[in-house]
Structure formats: structure tokens, C-alpha cells
Image (cartoon, rainbow, N blue to C red; front, side, top):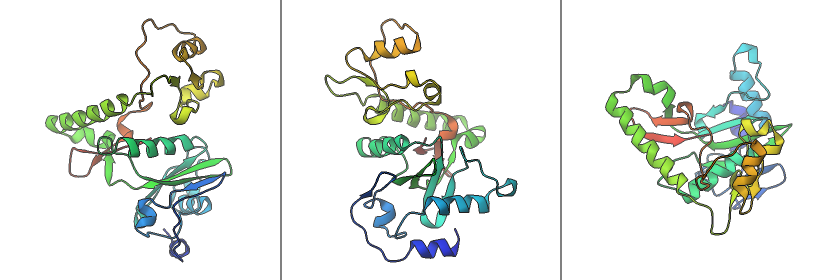
Length: 240
């Protein structure tokens, strides 16, 4: 991170509990501000500038799906683009509050919308993608990470909806954000009510006999979204 940006962020420090408007939400009681890493989060313009400066291909960066930005000096990880959604940040906040100690996810510091892109600011996790570590792991190490993954999956799948409530969608009864659904607006939902499952099946044109109860789940649990602690086979965090 450039000295100019660091200096602008680390000026006068005032921390109310939370700050929000229609385009941004900042959790000023998060670790980023409690530890006084900086007076504010980097702006979208600053993040784009860092990516362009540090990027390959002559500084050309994809608008829809740019590489994330890591700022180690601030313990900050920023993922952004047109395909990033606020819903992802809201889901991480919910998991961290409801499943703390059972499912590890990065702490969310805030988000912002700017020029058609969404920016999610979160803690930088000290870990490696499982996709990179798996080939070098021993059988016992692989079993260790699989057991921990199974425990995490069980924790979120046991987070059932309230009595008398049934919906299929994203967190807080929002539409589904998986790419397979966003390509067809009519199947994004949310589908609500006692017949939510039937609504969902009808929208997709499928008929599943004796469907299982609706549960909370991860729609992209793959090795690259699973972080393993360095020098250890233990889970560091689950992302995306």
C-alpha cells in the first residue's frame, strides 16, 4: 500500500458504532476500527488504483471480476467487482454472529457500491487455499481437514428457519445469487410460504418427490474457497 494512501487513512480517528448510507456500510465496532488500524477503509478509487499498480498485463484489470486486493499492513482483504454482492457480506456477518466457534469466516469491516461494482472489506486470513495444499498433504492431514469441514457443514445445515417460516433464497429473504439462478431472473426468488419448495420446483421445471427440509448451506464449497492454516492441516476459514 502506498505511503500516501496509508497517511490519508490513518489521520484523525473518530469511531461511532456504525456508519451507513445507500451505497456504503461500515462496521465501526469491528476489529479494524477497534484496533485503530486506520481512520477509515480505503475508498473504491484507492482499491482500483492499488490493483492497477500491482496487477499484471500492463495494469489492465477486469471490471467484472478483478483480482482481490490484499493490504497486509492493515490486515485487510478486499474483493470487488460487478459479480460481488452485498449479500455475501451480510451472510458472513450472520455466520460470524450465529456460528462463532463452529464455523470460521473472515470478519467483515464493511462494504461499498461504486460505479457498478461492489466492494467487500474483510479481515485478511493467514492461510492457504486447500486447492494448493491438498496435493502435498499426507493422508492423516487430509482426514483432519475433512473432519473439520464436515463439522462446519453440519453446523450451518443445522441452522434451521424459524417455526412457521419457510423460504428459499439468500440471507434475510433476499433473491438467490448463485450464477445459475441469476442468469434466469424467474428462478431467483425468494420463494416464500408453506409451498415455497413447490414454487421453487415449478420455477425450475423439476419435480422432486419427498424433498428434504430447507436448510442453510454454502452454494460454492470448493477447495479454493477453503483456507487452511499455514504449517497446519487445520481450517483457517471458509470464504465466498
